[in-house]
Each structure stands twice: as C-alpha cells, then as structure tokens.
Image (cartoon, rainbow over all chains, first blue to last red; front, side, top):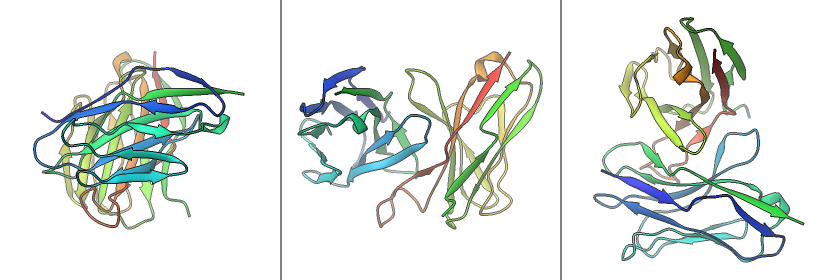
Amino acid sequence: GNSVTQMEGPVTLSEEAFLTINCTYTATGYPSLFWYVQYPGEGLQLLLKATKADDKGSNKGFEATYRKETTSFHLEKGSVQVSDSAVYFCALSDPDTDKLIFGTGTRLQVFP
Amino acid sequence: NAGVTQTPKFRILKIGQSMTLQCTQDMNHNYMYWYRQDPGMGLKLIYYSVGAGITDKGEVPNGYNVSRSTTEDFPLRLELAAPSQTSVYFCASSSGVRREPNGELFFGEGSRLTVL
C-alpha cells in the first residue's frame, strides 16, 4: 500500500544551521507530495507541495524536490531560525482518492 | 476568516461516556476529514466525506461515527469512550487534494480528548 517514511526526531540545530529532513515514499501511480508544518498548539498547515517528478516546491526558505528515481521528497532549508521550531510532516496524496497519507512527523528544535 | 473551527478544544471523559466533537468550515469545501494524532504515530484518518450525505471509513474508524448533513458541518461521535481513544483530534477540509489550485487541506486547531 501507499506509505510515507520520515526520519526520526527530534532534530536539534543552532540558528543559521542547514536543515535536511528526509522523507521517502511508496506509492502506486503518481502521487502529489506535500510538507505540512505544525507549530506548537496549532493545527497543521501546508508548507509546500510538488505534483510531478522533478518539481521543486518552495516556501518561506524551505525547498523540497520530487525525486521519482529515489522515491524521495527531502525538506531543506539553508539557514534555520528559532521560529522554525515545529513538527514537520511529509505526506502524499493517494492517486486514486482524495485522501492524504502522512508520515509520523519530525520535530525540529532550533536554539539561538 | 474562520476557516475550520473545532469544539471543544479540551475534554475529559470517563470510560463508557459518549460525546460529539464538532467541526464546521466556511470555505464551501466538499471534502472533510477527521484525523487522530497520537504521539510518535503521525496522523491516522478516522473518517472522511466527499460531500453532504456521503461518508466513508478511513484507517481507524472503530469506535467512531460521523454524519454529514450539510456542506459546512462534519461532527465526529465517540460512543462508549475507551482509554485507547485518548488522542488529539483534527478536522480538516479541502476542495480535493487532486484538484487545483493546490489540493491543500485546511486544519482546525485540534481537540484534545482524555479518557480516564
């Protein structure tokens, strides 16, 4: 079945460090891929998405590229800020339905 | 801009009690979803709806019921609450993840339920 695997957290970084959060997927067909972010005490909100192979999604300095050959959608940011501290979820859209399948989430903690 | 509104935000139940989590959205979305979030387990889909009068089971529907009498509202009913239902519940809505402009899900702020 379709699934998403994320790296375990927490990821702890100093401000201005480079961030990578790994995400790989298993899917039949051609899903869209998403990163959602959950700030403390809030619901999830869309961070970025990519709908086909080699697409790059970007927002707020974060980027992720849809890699079909490695079935990956890793999240990167060149210089993190304390305000980026949150839980990040990778997700894919089931190609046959309107459901999203989420990974387990990765907590990012950024210290000054 | 209310978006997706969930109530209550917090609730403590005794084993065997019943309750309804309310969810309403003002974006005229056809698709609505209920997820539960357990620590370290990500989000699991409980039920979803593709339009008024239509509902379907997700991954973990046991112990829950839903209805969708209007486009705006999608309540989640817990019958005979059990400790295993202690979780944070999120309602979400969408115009459809496969549809443009971007298939985004809009989430409520969550309802934290504890069953003792």
